[in-house]
Length: 487
Image 1 (cartoon, rainbow, N blue to C red):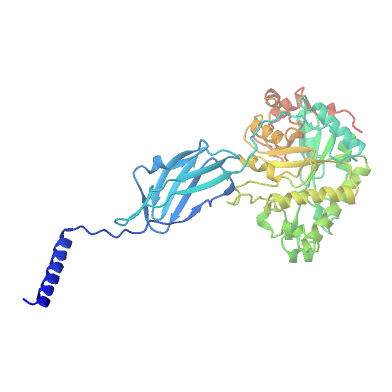
Image 2: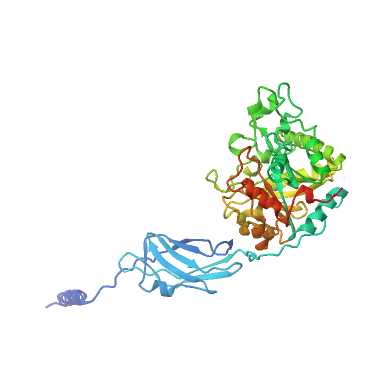
């Protein structure tokens, strides 16, 4: 055998040997890349989250699953509790509870907890999310301890006398009150209660609802002319207190505004949100037609209130009532029923402040005691603070309550007191059925007055003649006959 043939034989033998050995040795598998975290919700470092519960979501680049001990492996600090861990499609969800106001948390998903679905796939790397909860001041039930002076330091002597009187009666006696009948600037309802009980309510409520039509257009003799303020002046001179509010009618559109108010355009004005496109945000901007409208209207209202000031009559002034409205009336939170609340809390507060500044600084009205009115819808009180114009603009906090009972209204009372931390007098600024004063005092509810809304010739279910007599006969209820002169 030649040398070259021998070498060839050895090479073939080596190849066969290697092949034989490879046949029996295992092959290292090719491993698949691990799932990769793409995002978290909330993002790492998110602040000012709200609520006691939160679901944190980890989104990966592919479908995932969790190992059998995932719920035990995932952790959260500061005494929060993991209620549920779930992996579906590309998302790992971790439901947390027990979160506390102002607390910072760290949620940790250890390496190996999240897996992919592919064979021989590596587990995902660990992930950590930090977040913090918004600090919410704990709810405290305050005691009523109202400030001793009106927010207007230049208030008239009569306004100061009335406020001082209300302070003196707080927790001792409640004033009786009714809203005027019909055209809202007469004493018919006052006189009706007198005919039933032999006593006049101490507080008479009136309304600038027809302000747009005063002075009265030709042929509209049935509409109020507010130049005649004989009704409130008569009530004040007889010892009663005067309350004015304003169902503020605005043009339904710019074209209605351009037409003006006349016998052909009575329906061109409204105060309901769903009846007008009038924008409160535009009205707050100088140079808009809406702003021109509200400024002229405020000038007109101030002129009529000035008649009362010149006559020495202080006015418990209650504008922009029920601003937040019924939170679910139109199927959307904060979609209030009056246009002044439709834009939400901030524009409404701005309008209230604008009105106060305009009345006092521009028109010199110092005879007003300013009331901020709320709506009593169950649960709405959680939003009241957002709408409150502030202690510098409000003297009394009122709530309008229409319930089919005569209960003391404990929930509404405490919410009113809490709103200004006890610093403002509180009142039932409107009601249907009268809260039984004896129940109110027994509950410790220091309502300054109640004011029954006008319901025409038909009164509310529990306001029977006998109940009216009972209420007006209570020792702790003030009628006009029991009022001192506050001039």
